[in-house]
Length: 317
Image 1: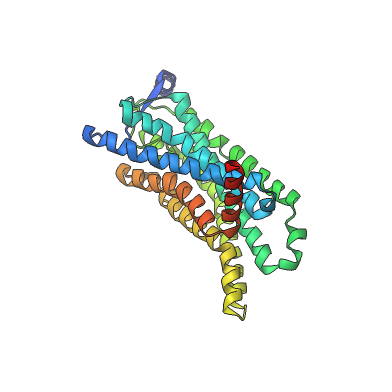
Image 2: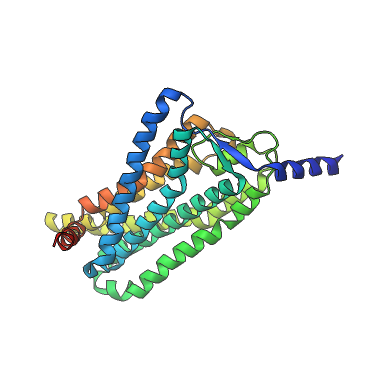
C-alpha cells in the first residue's frame, strides 16, 4: 500500500509540466489598468536602479565602499524585479497564466537567492557605516576596496549557494492536489500550500537557514546601528550630529523598509498562509523596496546628484 502511494506521488510529480499563476485579480475590467500601473512601476525601478549603477560605475569619485555596495544593491533590485514583474505583466495582458515547472522552480530559486544576498549586503553596508562613524581614523584600513569586493562577492556567493537546498527540495515535491498558485509569482509558501507531499523538510530548512544566516545578520545590522546612533548622540554640535546622521540615514531607511516587508512575508508558519494578504505584502517587498532605494539614495545624497549632473553634461556635450 505504502509503495503504491509513493509511486502515485512520484507519477504525479513527474506529470507536472506547468503551474497556473493567478495574479492580482480575476476581474477583466481591472486587468489593463493594473497592467499599465505595473508597467510604469517596472520602468521606474529599472531606470532608477540602472541610473544609480551607471553613475557609480562611471564616476571614479564614487568608487568608495559605500557606493560600491550601493551599486550591488541596485543590481539586486534590477534582477529581483526582472525575475517577477515581466511574467506578471504577461499574465495581466494576455491572461495566459501558465508557467512551466522548471520556470516556477527557477523563479523561486532566483527570488530566494537575491533576498538572501540582499540581507547579507545590507549587513555589510551597516558594518561599513559603523566603521565610517565609529572608527573614522581607521576606516580606509579596515574597509579597503579589496575588503569591499570580498564582502560583496561573499554576499552573492553565499546567497546563491544557501538557497540551492530549498530549490532542490521544492522541485521534488508532488503537486497532485492542485497546480493553481494563488499568488503573483511562484513563492515558497504558495507552493508548499498546494503540495500534497510532506513539506516538513522544506519548512525545517527555512527555520535552520533563518537561524544560521538571517537572524545573526539582522542582529549584526541592528547592533551596528545601535553603536552608530549612540556615537552620533555623543557629538556635541548639532551640525556635527546632522552631518554624521546624514551619512547613514538613507541606508537605515532602506534597511527598515526591507526588514519590515520581509518579516511580513516569511516570519510566520505556512498554516497561517492567506493568499490575498500574502499578495499585497509581496507587492510591497517586490515593488516598494526596489523603487525606494534609488529615490532615497539619490535624493538624499549630494555626491550622487553631482555625479549624475556630470554624466548628464558629458552626454549633452
